Image (cartoon, rainbow, N blue to C red; front, side):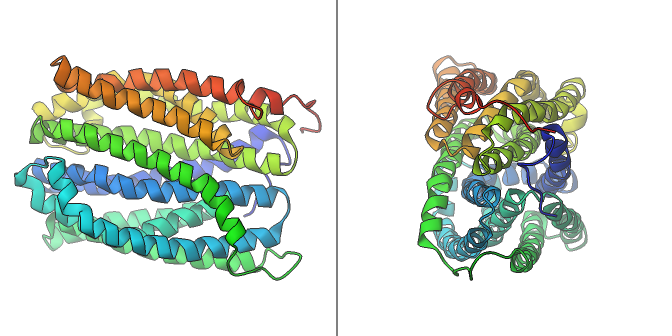
Length: 455
């Protein structure tokens, strides 16, 4: 269902819009975590470490997919808010053609650099073979990952958060089923986990694209849409490229951190892998929910209703709070129970490492949620320079502190985890200032229009 976010009560709109997004991201994380859970529980901690070792590399590719998702979503949201439906249809066809080319190029690059990068990261030899097998199968299916992400970005731009949810539920359940079949019944090990993801992601991506193309035929417009528009592609790139760079810089920074973690051995790596999966579960959920604020911002600016933004920001804060509180309470009160999803090491080094990470990082979830919400407003208003500055600020602080605490001060793995809350806190302060007060399109300035006609 297409939903106009520039009309109606912002609290009601954003909650109704966000609920399917929350459901979607939960299933998305089930989808992503299934490999890690089954690797650690059904195989062993070395399989868990192998999946974890390839994770920072796969995140570089995921960064490209997420950046494209953001670029597509913001531009399509703006056209949709302006009621320019022909441009919406042109955007969709332009996006699909572009990502098919980009996906093929990225796959070739990934296959070429996979092994050298894993060696550069000092991946332990005991898990290298499984880690490379998982990585190469993932890269082979990257086109599907990219296609699925841009299609869901377009759906959310149109105010439809329900359709992607249905695709994701089916895909997630299918992935878990195939994981169990390939590992337990066929004994395919780590490679079986990757093949299950490849198959289910491919089916979901193709079906999602076909459903979207059918939706576009019904949308209408004032003229026949062009199949490809260089102007629209350029506009999307102006948003997508900074987003891709931002996500990629994060992933590259995580590669440096991963190299430091790898130096502490397989069991610390296994514990870190389990904890970082739990952390990513929360952050991805939060990113998806704050993405609603990006679409809301873009649609309302497109409809020339900036007075609705401050109320929308308050509404989205309540949605974020509903996510932060349960995650924080569960991870802090029951860290061992959460980590046991991934590892059988009940009292060993892997468990100790994971618990330590959670206890140092989780108390700052409320802080980082505020940063991500401000970032979402800046993305929706196409303030990409400010958006990139806050993200790179966080990343640089975390990477530098990891090296200082671990290698310079000899704090070991504890120093690595400490860099997260420090980086988050500093970047959040900067993000709030840039979003609310700095620049000609800051939230305070563009929202000074008298708030009216908000029912």
